[in-house]
Image (cartoon, rainbow, N blue to C red; front, side, top):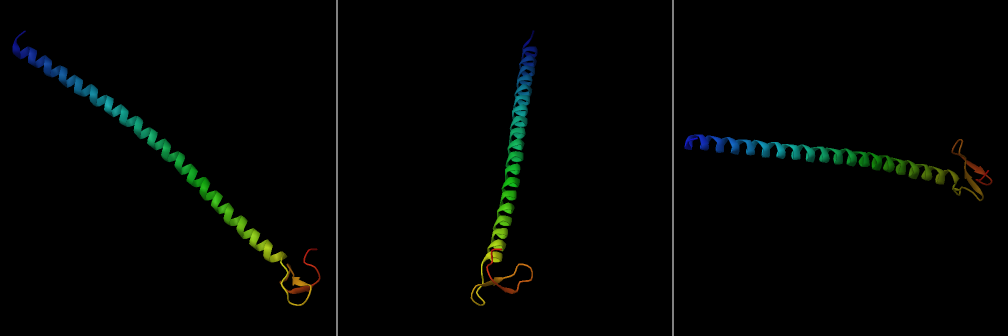
Length: 96
C-alpha cells in the first residue's frame, strides 16, 4: 500500500471517528432535551396545583368573610342583628 492509500485510510478513519462522536453528542443532546421536557411538564403540573390552591384559598376567605358578616350582630338598636333573608334589622339573637 502506498502513501496515498495510507493517507486515504487515515482520513476515512478520522471521518468515521467524527461521525461516531457526532452521533454520541446527538444522543446525549436528545436525552437532555427529554429530561428538560419532563421537568417542564412536572413544573407545569405544580404551577397548576398552586393555582388551584390559590383559588381555593380565595374562595375559602370569601366564604369566611360572607359567613362572618352574616353572623355578626350590627347594632341598630339593642340586641338586634341583620336578617339573612332580606338584609333588614331584626330583633333578638342572631344565632337561631
